[in-house]
Image (tube, rainbow, N blue to C red; front, top):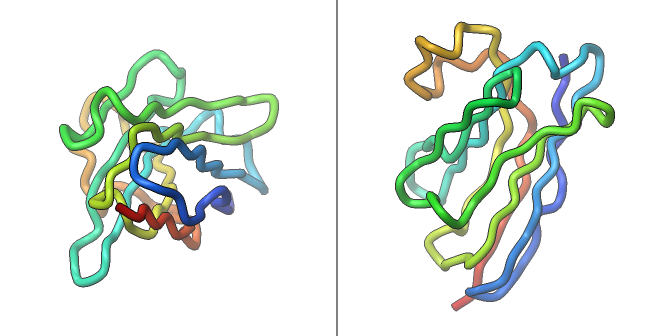
Length: 125
C-alpha cells in the first residue's frame, strides 16, 4: 500500500485543520493506521492511532480532546481532525500503516511498516 498525506498548511493558534491520508494499491481497511509528527530538531512522535476495525483509538496525551482520528473505507482514506491548535503542534505530520496486532501495538515508530511523505502543519501564535 502507498500513502499520501494532504491538508497541511499555515493556521493560527485556536484554528482547526483536517489532514487526510489516502491509500492506494491496497485497501486500508485491513490496516491499523496512525499519525505521527516530527518537529524541527525533535524525534518523530506518536499522535493518534485507529484500529483496522475502526472501533478503537489511541491518542498521545498532548492531543487528547483536541484531535480525532477516523477513517472512510469507501474513500480508502484516514483523517486527522485537529482543533484548538497550538504553536507546539507545528510539525510535519506523517500517516503510517501496520498489520501488526492492535492489542500488541505500543505505538512506536518501528511498529509501522508503511509511511507517507508527510505534510507540513504550521501554527502561528
